[in-house]
Amino acid sequence: MTYRPDGNGHLVKVGPGRYRLNFSPSDFKNEKGAATEPYSVAVDDSVAPWIDRYLSEARQYLIDADETSRFFLPAARGPEVTPQFLSDEGLSQTGGYKTDGLSSRVKKLTALYIDGCPGFGPHSFRHVIATDHLRRNPGDYLTVATLLHDKLETVLKNYSHLKVQDGLRRLSSGIQLAQEELAAARRLPT
Image 1: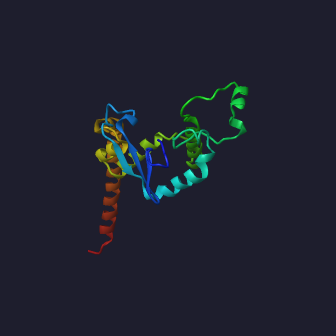
Image 2: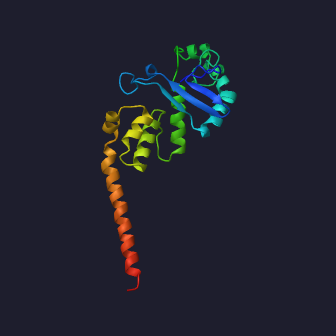
Image 3: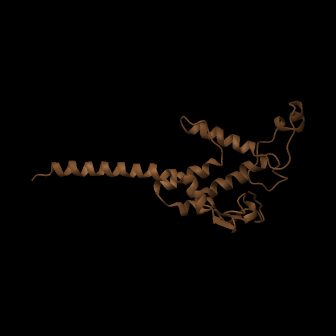
C-alpha cells in the first residue's frame, strides 16, 4: 500500500480526518480471480487519527521513508541498521519492500495482548474478521466475499466449516432459551 501527500497513492486523504483506499485489480494477487474491478472504499473515520499520527510522528523515522511511497516501512533508522552493521553481521539489505519488520511487530503485539496466543501476522486479520462476521451473521458469505475482495466460491470453500459449528451453537442457545421459558412457565401460578 502506498501513500503520497499529493493524493496519488493507494491511501488518499480526502479531507480532515478522512481517507480512502484505492486499488486497481493489478494490485491484488487474485487479479485473475475475484479482483477484477477497482477497489475503492472509505477508511473508517475512527482510524484516521491513527493514520495522521503515524504519518506525522513515526513514518519519517523509518527505513527508506524518503525514498519510497510505501505506507508501511520495516523498522526504525539508526546505527543498528546501517549497511556496515548488516555487513558485520553477515547480512545484506534487500532491495524493495521489506515486510519482516511489520510482520514481526504484529506477531509480537498479538502474542503480548492475546492471552495464550503465540502471535500471528497481519494477513491473519483477514481470517479473524471473516470468521467473526460469520459467527455474528451466520450464512452471510456474500458480505465476507465483498470484505475480503474475493470470490464467493473461495469464501464458501474456506469458511463453510463454520456452518456446523455455528448451527450447533445456535441450537444450544435455542435449547437454553427453551429451558428458561419452561422454568419461567413452571413458576407462574395456575
